Length: 164
Image 1: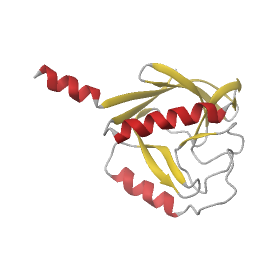
Image 2 (image 1 turned 90 degrees about the vertical axis):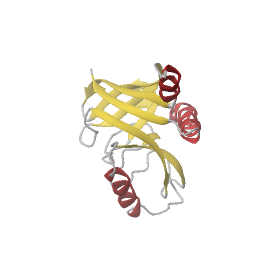
Image 3 (image 1 turned 120 degrees about the horizontal axis):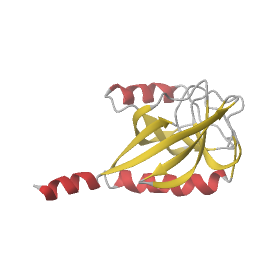
Image 4 (image 1 turned 135 degrees about the vertical axis):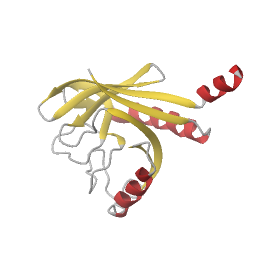
């Protein structure tokens, strides 16, 4: 009986975004994955997700033409909403780190900051100054690979967003 509970617990990875402070239109935070601090985060105050429990999934983004980590509510309707959002995106040839999504899409992605960004994305990197990040690709790619491997092993990744 105890062995089954342990196996069940091994199939759940926990991620947490701890929002530490806000300055102007940016909310700064830290992303922890399985208890280890991975990187800093920046979100736009206007489109930031409310604090609560979510799930991380990988979804093919037509705009970025690759699988990206996306935050969804752990409800059955979340997948339908995700597909509806993706219908608004069109493939682009000139996507850069700071390219805006055409609609609100709470995606984990690399970038430098949230100035004029209202697409709900959670920008990953190393904090340079509040609201601005550096080395976004150095932090994004290892995290995206960890998420890919976990989901490939049929592991559920729960995400908790907390305000400190």
